[in-house]
Image (tube, rainbow, N blue to C red; front, side, top):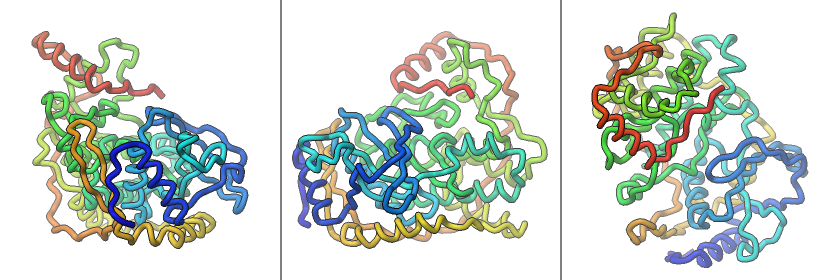
Length: 406
């Protein structure tokens, strides 16, 4: 397919219709799904689980809001396909239209068909299973998450909203998802797009610096919090008073000042060093995803822990293999998409070629216990009202969501 300069929605629609017609993207008839039930919702729209009649497999259907630009949805498909080879990333399977009206021009309400995670979110998984998890299990969970993040970073993709609610578990295997908030690094560097997330996982530099741009080290900060969460079995700052109207401001300022969660008793010292290095206040002091992978591999090797000893879902594997065959021409073709940067009116050319992850240099991960780690009950005293007002305005601008109380 020749390069396509899609400058308006109709061109994006035509491109997607053509991709389906040529079987570059698999099309699922909506009437072939049954037992469709909503399982989640967010700023992008809703997620449903459904049974695919042909095989009985349970799949996930991600529905977008009507006002979601088609090019943004296609960009999400592009991002999913770019890392679809990785076993710890939710698999993209195809698309469907809710009323089986094949033309997007008549019906924009369509869904992305994806792999379904039977264990729910990591947060829910830890809540239900933490008491039975050994440290071998915890290391395996951590390792799979880091490997998935390494894959994104190797492809120059930032997640930007990494937290335990959009990391999923399928048959005890980690599945990283929710790429609706992911962006290519080049696009982020040219846009002033807003950040959406939950405070404990957000790089504190974003609170301090108005124009601070998210980067790979921002994802690493979030990773550090998640690694701590795996050691504790509970969300960060669980004991915080969520009903406090000033909760967001207080917590953000405390984190800016070095406030972190407390070390959980009986946590291996090498694991503590790893996650505290990840959430270091200074981005340059944080390790890369590849360095974290290397460090975990060394630790797990010394402890004779297998990195991944889970069996793949056989039925789902067949469905994925079927889709790989259907989408081969799409993956390997020289199709080019031109994404319109809505902030700068610039066109950014991106390629659909799936690139193999490059091997990065192996450096030892820097690790140390943050001396500024404080107890969750420490009382914050505002030293200057200007600081509180500054953070309040920034939080308002960023539209940061308050942590859901569980």
